[in-house]
Image 1 (tube, helix red, strand yellow):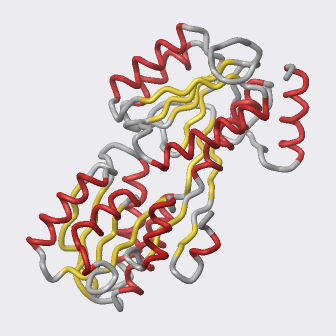
Image 2 (image 1 turned 30 degrees about the vertical axis):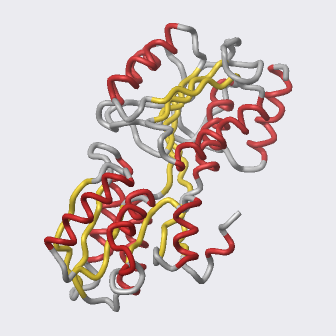
Length: 317
């Protein structure tokens, strides 16, 4: 697809109201690269691909890149901030026209994006913020609102009374911080619910199995668990065995395929569904607009929804 054709597609997106804004944009124009497509070379730096959620982010981004004629190269930081910094530096040196980053650590990411910002490249954050850096735009779910929704769902499941534990995500990520803040705010509305323990399991299913097992042994009278993503929720369900959905109720976050299946099966009482493919798609659409000299919003929120057994069929593919 030619540059002018891609510009017309982006213009159509803009006219549909998907990308309207007031923040500063990046530069446009360079072409080339090793990814799929024949237009501007853009790098998508993901925190990890060892998580179905971020695989979906990648797939949504790739679909949009193919439609818009961008050449998308995806790199996997494997949840290591140093690796992410090195990969981004290499991409900038190789001549990438723009950077989309899903930060391993929202604080450490400022140093990672510095080479791109110094080169006046557009930088789009996806799912997680880049703290202390003036990036072009951030497209992310409303994690604070989602945390509040999770608190409401868990409270309803346990009859607004009892002891609960929280499995926290990766420290330093805006997603974990905001979901936790929203949950704390939401659960405060239920004075008969007590959070007896909070511990990180780093958004990882296997780690959550171990953490939940230990916390349940320490607090055998727990009746609810909030996990800041579905992978950790599924680890908690493994730890609970037959008690999941019967004696102890688990709420997750993400709306992954495995999470939705667990909701359908009754072992997961609810998940706060994000739209990872839409996050990836919108990140690429924002990048294309920035490269074409358009002005984009500094923040683009994507709504989340509470999924229970009552509406899970609407989300299963």
